[in-house]
Image 1 (cartoon, rainbow, N blue to C red):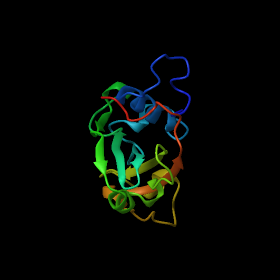
Image 2: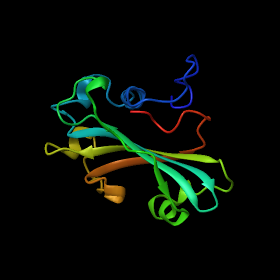
Image 3: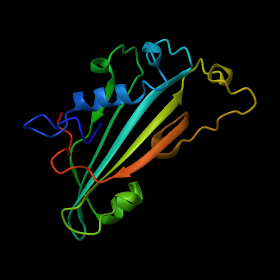
Image 4: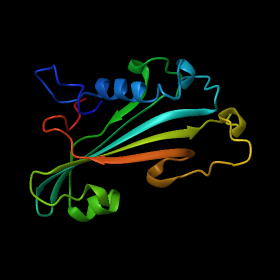
Length: 166
């Protein structure tokens, strides 16, 4: 969805509204209805983080963190809680400390980490998910408190999609 959304548009750069729609559509395989929104009947909500890096030269990167989630009384993609960080200058050591997968091999190269997460709500009960024996372990990496399931993928985005515009 990230790679294809802007195919029919003149301006290919993604916006925060595009990110919200991508996140909403990407979790419909589990949440078939508005159960992804308040009151979260499964006791979990959906969150997606995008970590973008572009190597300008040997030790100079452009970096952006964008996220959106189905928390805090939202009921549609346009009302999802989101944040679009500013494009920042990072050194290679800063990029390695944030996400080693974002280190690029040549100038002008871009990489994107997409992290899709399901996070616990206060009404979480493992049996609502069909887990009767196992308790999912929380993963708190990258400030994702209460994350019970996370999937990360690293891609090279099409030129012009990133950084995300506010």
